[in-house]
Image 1 (cartoon, rainbow, N blue to C red):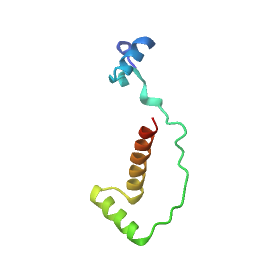
Image 2: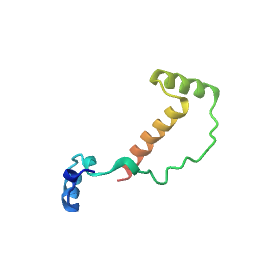
Image 3: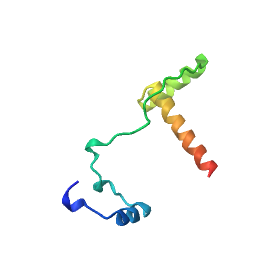
Image 4: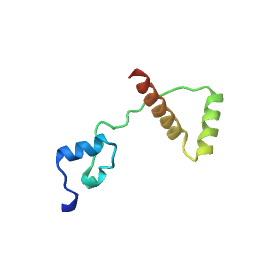
Length: 84
């Protein structure tokens, strides 16, 4: 964060609340993402579902695991919107 990038907490809050980009005010060089340690789970899928997952993953250029994660995130976020 440069000297020119300093801002008061109130001004930062206002910008954030107005959905402005405030990333310039943070030093991302030491940023961490807490509580994101992967936890392994096993899920059994029928063969037809694995084939369809693989087709969709190939079409998007991602792995099966990445596709499943993307779809789960989308669904979980949509579900949290419904709960509000």
